Amino acid sequence: MLVALPVVLAAGVLTPAAAAASVTSSGRTTACAPASAVDKAVRYIKAQQQPDGSFPSVGQTSTADAVYALVALGVDPSTVRRDGKSAVDWIYSQTTSIPNAGVAAKFLLALALAKKPTVAPDGFDFKNRVKSAYDPATGLYDTNPTGNAYALAALRAVGERPPSRALRAWEDLQQPDGGWSAYRPAAETDTNTTAVSLVALKANGRSRTIPAALRYLRTQQSADAGFTFSTAYGTASDANSTGLVILALRATGQNFRNWRKGNADPAGRLLDLQNPSGAFRYNDESPGDNAFATFQAGQALGLIRCR
Image 1 (cartoon, rainbow, N blue to C red):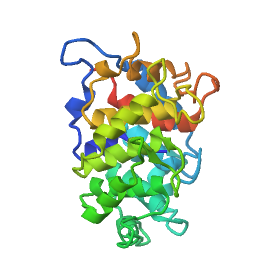
Image 2: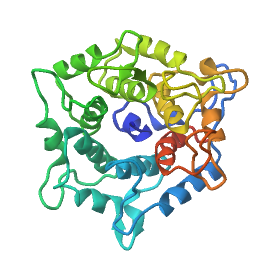
Image 3: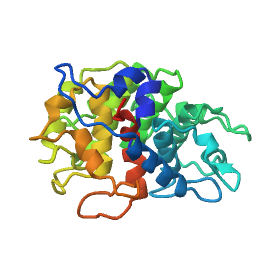
Image 4: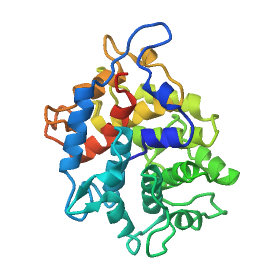
C-alpha cells in the first residue's frame, strides 16, 4: 500500500550514500541486491507497460508505484515508453478522474520523483489538489488512512510542510500496539500503513511515535526475517510488506543486523522472494509473478543494491 525509497531520499530522510550502505557499523555484512537482480526487476517492470503508458495492477495508482520503483532502481520513468507514451503521460491524462487527495498525492509524488511539472498540461495542479483537501477540524487530508499518509509524504517531497495540526492528528491515530490501521474507525493494525506512516513522519521531522512503531514491527516479523501484512491474518512474510518495512527501517536509521532471524535479515528475505523472471512473488504460498508486489518490492530493491 505504500511509499518508496525515492520518498525517503526526496524528503531528505536519507542520503543516497547512507541508503546504499550494506555493511553494518560492526563490519558484519548484510544482504544486498546484486546488479543482476536489479536489472531483471527493471526488465520485468518495463514489460508490464501498456500502450497508454500505464502500469496496471491493483487500483488506479499502481502506475505511481511503478514510477517509484523505476526511480529507486535508477531508471528515468519518462524514458520508459510504449507506443510513445510514458507513465507521466498517463498520469497527466487522469486529471478528470481523481477521486480523492490520496490518489492525487500518489500521482504528485510520482511526478516529483520523475522531475516533471506537478501541473498537468490541462492546468490541473496536483499539489493544490492535495493541499485544498486539508480539513483543519480533523487535521486530515483524506479520510482514508493510507491516502492521508501519502499526502503527508508527498507534500514534504515537493517542499511543502504540512501544518503541525496535520502531523499531530496522524500521530494521534497510532494505535495502542504501536501500529497504524488502514481503516477508520481503526481495526487491526498492519505493517504497510505503519511503514508509510514512519516514513511520512520522519520526513516531516517527527520522531515521538517511532519507538513504539518499531516495537510493533518486531511483533510482525516472520521467522524468515521478512514481514507479514498483519499477524491478524497469518505469519507468512510477503514481498510487499517486507519491502515497505525495509524502507521504514532505513528511514528510521535501523541496522539490519539488529533485525536478523538466525542467519537471515530482511534484505535477504526480500531477495529470496524474487522469481527468475525478475518479478517478485507475493509470498511463497502464491509463487507466481506478481506485478504489484514487484512495483512495491522494487522500491526497496533499489535501496539494498550492492555498491
